[in-house]
Amino acid sequence: MTDILDDLAWRDLIAQSTDLDELRALLAAGPVTLYCGFDPTAPSLHLGNLIQILTLRRFQKAGHRPIGLVGGATGLIGDPSGKSAERVLNSEETVAGWVERIRGQVSKFLDFDEGPTGALMVSNLDWTGPMSAIEFLRDIGKHFPVNRMLARETVRARLDTTGMSYTEFSYVLLQSMDFLELYRRYGCRLQTGGSDQWGNLTAGVDLIRRVEGGTAHALTTPLLTKADGSKFGKTAGGETYWLDPELTSPYAFYQFWINTDDRDVENFLKVFSFRPREEIDDLIKQGADRPAARAPQRALAEEMTTLVHGADETARVMAASRALFGQGVLEELDERTLKAALAEVPRAEVPPGELPTVVDLLAACGLCKSKSEARRAIAQGGAYLNNRKVESEDATPAASDLLHGRFLVLRRGKRNVGGVEVTGR
Image (tube, rainbow, N blue to C red; front, side, top):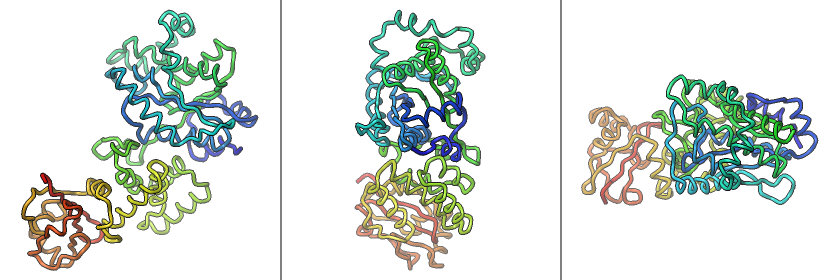
């Protein structure tokens, strides 16, 4: 086993802990069972959830046993932490479907062998569903002083503004009961989560102490922010980057990491990569010596896309990324990957029939501000159609130029790419 806490500390992945010295001794004594919960409040997990999934993976690689818990019960309520208003409750059928999708997503990152560190996946609906309200109030509720619950930061903030229903007020009891149940069933001694979960995690630790007289631990990771102050894992327009390839294409996922700000890339490599310290330090040095090459961003993008979407999908995405900028053969890209790549660049749609001139298309997709600017770009030799230099201001694409019968790739200079799609076919 490696010293997982030292590794997490170097990666800036420890925000709060109940007692690091006691936890270190517990981890050194043998395999420790730990868990992290994921509520199905959407059909997929997102990049922010990836930090917690990979933390479980790190503990398993260090010789410990992870449990991934999907909130089949808590997902029916929703955690009020960090929320300024009451959640909209989803139907039981919807949540059940999301449970299975998220169970599959988390499972991809863990090893389920039969040894002492073999992972488990559970749903808290398995023990919450059969419990009556009276049992819940008698066995769990009596251990939660109301004055202490009212003092919780999440509760105080909501009571001072929009208010909070009893449903969300009781969420902490349900999550605490999860920790108690996993402690009883599997000897689980550690719960991990984001720092916004600290109150929920420590409530579970306290419940185990009150009910079983046992010792358990909580460990949180910092909430990740970007150097420019924007939210991690969001597009410029505020949209979420999902782990599901149907919601966020592997190409868009890859480009997210490629576009990492130089100020963020070292932190992102530490938080997400499984590379050792020496490799990360070397990549950061390469980035400082040759910033334009973006070596750390490329290494991060390849590793993370492979981890989430697999090596084959990553190879297709990297081929598309090269081809769009004239370093590969566009005709060799499959239609799905090309469509996803063009969705990430300025693009225009044209109806079927006779295609407009390249001048018109350069202006339509925004690579040039006007048609006169487009003509100048062509005259100066800086305009490309499907990676072939456009020689004439009157050039018009032919039907045979359409990739997969519907796409054109335009480029101005080396770095500015646009797309055209023939729609309505």
